Image 1: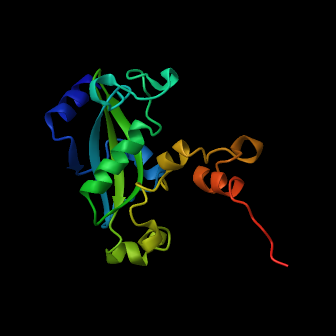
Image 2: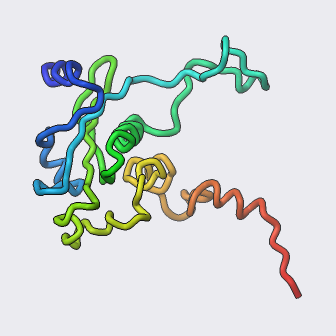
Image 3: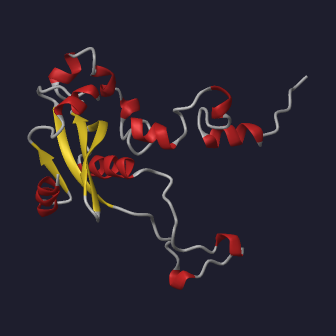
Length: 181
């Protein structure tokens, strides 16, 4: 593990991988060793996020004046998917998984699919991703990591105000609906 992380540190923060490090995990998440599938590895700085305000001045109530110890709403894994998705604009992010970490960084491998490849278009198990509705799906929280931070792993009474999204639930509660007679 330590040697592997050392190797990853010597490479660029986002780089293409010839074969998945964890083949069993990649196959579980939908990877197939055939044309149209690509694996990218991404490194993410570990730790929480500092509030980005000038000289630490938050012009508001004292309860919101924290600068340190801020936690990002999205996971490191989701951030890795987004960074790879921004690099590879012609590919679609399918899923991702953890491959290692050291004191400063976490490393993730992201599975991408080429929606313009004939092998992908003809495969009925994966050609759903060819549709335009799945364009930039990692940015919109439609991957597995994205659905997790949106709270969509829960069902029933535990998932109040999260479906179809928190914003849509808020809008439904805060919009007055008047019926015409």
